[in-house]
Image (cartoon, rainbow, N blue to C red; front, side, top):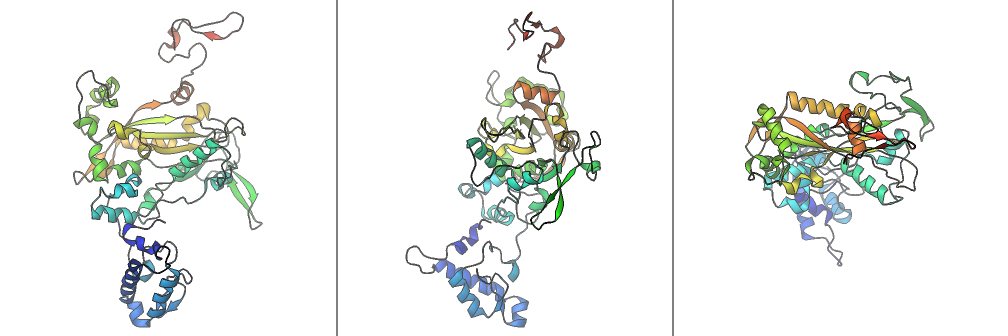
Length: 432
């Protein structure tokens, strides 16, 4: 857990080279003693739980001994909010969730003290379990993340670690920004999701959901054959409107019109304008979100490793200015489709949770607090396009992108023909 701004003195106990205690730490210990001594339990008993590195709030000691131990050993790890001594963790205002992109130190100066307090209250991001353990539970052993076998594996681990960034250890944020692990059929027939979450076998191929494996204690436990990860989209879109910086930038596409013929943002494209003309109720509020979806296969072990292909699905809001649209912080990893092979025509099975959220955002909307206007509004969203190569296009659209009818525009009117001897489909009419 990273120390909040007003408690960083806890990690700066010793002065450099001289080994003494910093005056800042002395003052912080006095602040702690003053808070803890004001509690009813101390007034009644006359002793305090010692939060030093050795005692870890397991021993009761007089005030002078607590102060001595704190100066000698320091506070126990991660004890930045003194909850065992009467302090309450600050709670976020309703409907306000802060984007982790603006939690970094180099962006803190852009916030007023109240916003910094809200960010500190949310607590830092954490990874609840290593991805190796997650893949092991699903029956596909991953690589050792301590020593990635190659650069692809290292990048893959970084991508999966970034997927955990919304998982705060804070109070309300944890319930809203948690990742879901959803069991699925090894043959990609179905997800154990919603009405099927308690099923024990696949409804289509009858493959069992679990396998038995021996745990570290020697007992047998049930482990799913295959499991996917889903990171909810709606809470992350709501967080964009929780910052004074990003909330106003979500109207950039509407407030910064370009002259005709200039293409510098997706909103200048004819597809965007046609969508606005077709759905005027949606386009009336510029805060409604336009989304793009990107999906492609990823091989973490490289070409020389064992064959394994997982499919990350990334959703990006295009309301933002061109300089922010494709920033890493605004590319929301929503689905991690497990391997070892690509889902092919069954990719829609794994997209069910995302489709459910997109349908909710399109038909009903979600109540969201816009901090730039200090009011709530019904946030809606629309998926305008997908970004992918041609094979992935076929998987997402359902159109067969191979053979004679490969062109999704010409369809049956294509001039393709098969070579006489090789049998290969050829296009001699300038098709790309």
